[in-house]
Amino acid sequence: MNEDNTQPQSDEPSVGQILKTHRENANISLAKIASLLKLTESQVQHIENDEYHLLGAKTFVKGYIKNYCRTLNIDSTAILAMLPAFSTSDKPVDMQSFSRRTEKEAHDSRLMTVSYLILAIVIGSSAVWWWQNATPIDEQTNTINANNSFITQQQENTKRLAEAADEVQLDDVEPEQQTNSASQNEQQTIQAAPLNDAQSTSEPTNTDLSTIFMMFNDESWVEIHDANDEKIAFGVKKAGYEMTLTGVAPFSVVLGKHDVVSITLNGEPVDISAFPKNRLAKFKLPLAE
Image 1 (tube, rainbow, N blue to C red):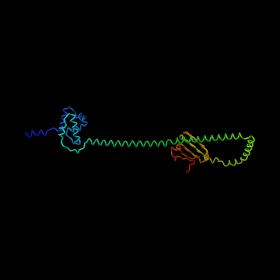
Image 2 (cartoon, rainbow, N blue to C red):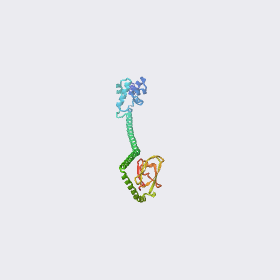
Image 3 (cartoon, rainbow, N blue to C red):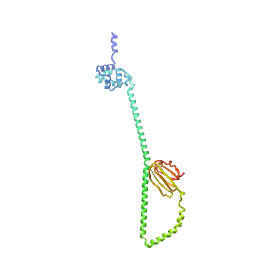
Image 4 (cartoon, helix red, strand yellow):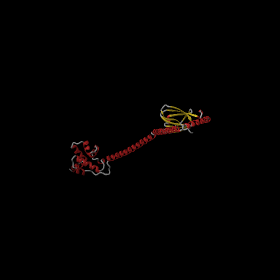
């Protein structure tokens, strides 16, 4: 009789078994109860199998069981009193996994932010470099063209003023003075003739002249002055244009795009590849060694 009385006591259902029985009596599936409790099916199975050590700290286990009882309309006080004592030092497995995932996502987010920042800096630096190297030729060419046009206009105005002044002076001279001036001019011409012959011998001969030949492989701006500072070439030359110039060396040369121009001086090729690209090239011909 004693054995029959003690045996039922040892076979009392556990908390997990009680909850499982109520769930099955309510005809609620494992997936459904897991969805209502916002837990995974494996966590619900751990509760029904009394595997509390796999669920984390005791505080979390009590919370899960309270929600379970509330969902099934069961009094949770008696159920919680049946919980066995277990260590509270265990940390929730799922919480660890979630924490690590959150930390990894935060790390990846910071890494992506730094990567985008570096990419923006590289793109911005490239844009500034391109702007600095692409615009100076056009700007400098336009500035030089404007300055030269202004100087040419000033020279023309000065010439016209001088011609007008000469005409006014000639109109004010009396006929006798004009006659005297004419005779004086004839005498000066006769006296200056021998000097002109002497001076002609000092003028440069063909052997003193140098010849420049230029081939333009692409459109480029050019300006050339000879040793007497006389402008012998100026303007924009189209691709395929060939130009031959003769004058007294040394020549002062300015090229907008020197890398598209081939130059020979007196039949000898001139190497101008050392000048920086995307900049106006200013040099003397022949090149100084």
